[in-house]
Length: 183
Image 1: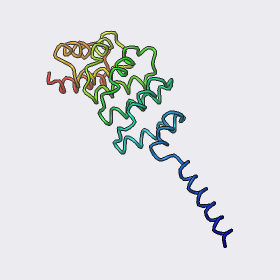
Image 2: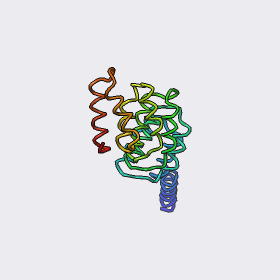
Image 3: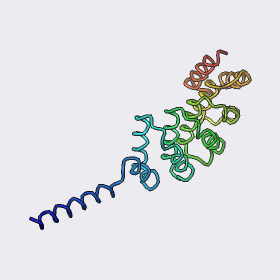
């Protein structure tokens, strides 16, 4: 009987130690952000976004700063955009400023993020994109100007609209942007 009692205590202590060794949910999430592979982190971002959880903002900014994956960086910006968190504003504007060194998908996410938080941080770059005919970035630039642009950018949109090389879908985006600006 005494032997049975000792075995039960031993098993209970091992089970208790195993429970203590298992990381809690917050610890598991931190480990995923710090050491996880891209698909795991992106899946966690989706979960955090659905929960509207902003507890990991600091860690996500660190991942954004240290990641070399444009897909992961874009997913982080999409998370910040969905929750309207202004914490990554300067980073997104910097991606747009150095757009030739970045993947197009990341630039699209940067524009979407800045539009979501109503930031004017990249308006100068958006105007430069129109002026320099960087057609692959037209959509983001036009939408940003429409969302937060001022009257001085109306002329840039009108000039692009009247240009002979402007296609119909770009003209439609310009009309929507001008309507948003009430111009």
